Amino acid sequence: MRNSRRSDHRQQSLALRILREPDTVARTESDRVAARLDLVQAWRHLSPDDQQVLTLTVFEDLTGSQAAKVLGITRATFSVRLMRARRRLRRHLDQAGPIPTPSTAPNAAAGRVAETGASA
Image (cartoon, rainbow, N blue to C red; front, side):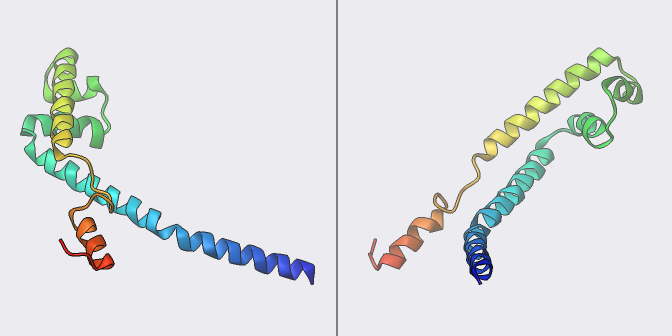
């Protein structure tokens, strides 16, 4: 009898914790989507040469020496191009700005005003 009550209590506690978590999971997923969209936008701003250098190292998983050989350039030249491409990508990502959270989103303040019945 006691075991049954303890088990029921644990199940109820677990259910309450699960009900509290979806907001965090949904926000995390939306943050990932927003970050991916920012990355796509930043990628489009890069030159074809920058995209090529990054593609060889990130997507093709080539070492610096292998990528340099593919491009027909020295390892040192490739390293400089990669460094500059990463810097430009980072700059474009920084220009995208922070990802808005539900509390800082433009409609969040308007929603709170509507909920309280206050007028602007």
